[in-house]
Image (tube, rainbow, N blue to C red; front, side):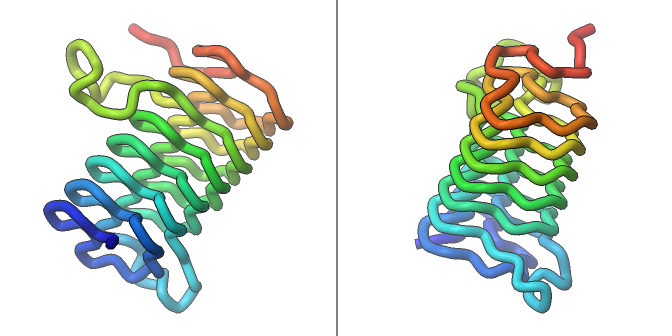
Length: 163
């Protein structure tokens, strides 16, 4: 089953595979040209509040797991990537497999205002290689290319700083 949750897949035109788009507003309001461009949300992906909403790109298998993960993403996301709260939020650079991962996935796991949480690859525009950008705030607002297996600690390769 797919598209489970309040308004999940509402106004979605992308191809949605098995067990994807699970959570309130997951995969909602996606690109009007998603269908004609063959945009696909692979199996076991886009799980969380607003996960993959308003996207214009393909999502790999078992990717975009966490509240707001991949929301407003516009560049290809590989398999097993973008795991965590706000991971790949407003992403505009390609992300390879197994990248952009952190442990916290839900807003209620954060003390205080969760919208201030700096997820892995939040608002990044560079190209991210395989197995890179692991930990909270890793590769946040990154604009350069990150090779495979780099930036493996929280706050690494980040241009975001807490106030």
